[in-house]
Length: 372
Image 1 (cartoon, one colour):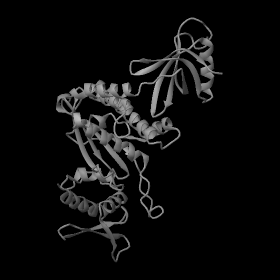
Image 2 (image 1 turned 135 degrees about the horizontal axis):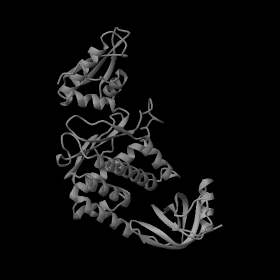
Image 3 (image 1 turned 90 degrees about the vertical axis):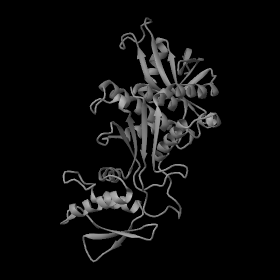
Image 4 (image 1 turned 180 degrees about the vertical axis):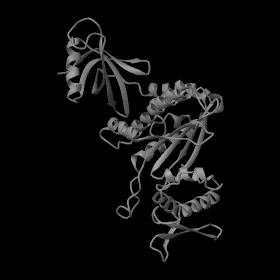
């Protein structure tokens, strides 16, 4: 495919980074504005590209267009996809594509689009929370999870392929090796790899690998399974196709490929729910207290009259216990609710004693009393 004159070309700097990440070698030529990039193929063929050093020189647009067409032939992809891959340097890309059963005249219901975006965001946060908690990579996994989701970007999809594209920033590796070894893998890449690994295993799940699917150190946690089920149930499609395109500047783990596609039937939502329940049952929690940061406050009465004995007052706490992060609802008396409000305003954690019980997909602490 020839690059269309109307196609927005990628920045020259990203093109050069893409070539280096793909194994092209940069060689200087007798020019202040051009460089030679050379690729040695396995069959001993040598391919050469003349690439401008910046986009302001004469003929830069033409040379970039010629480079795109050459890359499209070598990689057996359309120029459009080559451009997308180049623009994706520095990002790990996750695509959710809906089957044709949910698409009508290149569109889907607005309600479906809204739910898919919200469910995908929740799924990404659960994935980040799993990686940061189970990997022990931070003392504040919840804040790191929020930051990961906040930095992700929503991007366009290819023409004729309706879906949702998420870009997870990963940046460039540092110049040179750290202490003579490989630079540490960015945490955002570890989150994306956890999603890839879990989806691939879920797609091919059998009785033999059921243990792997319930090993939260390797694949999905209960919250991730529930998040996946929400995506499948709200897609209104027969299948959801997850596509991954990892930034070529960072090498993925040996068991994963830089480009991966996993198509999952939405009928498997029930299986995901069942696995979530299996994980929660295997990690049953008993305790007479919870401790953590308050994530939500709710009062049915006038907030300005907090000591009114009428109505209900409830808070939610994100409780980290062992390798689990639990959302716990806690109904409180007016006095304890006021204490919780003040702790929340000052950014302090609270400790509450009571009877912990299962409630739906979460927990509730009955007869809660804040420890002073």
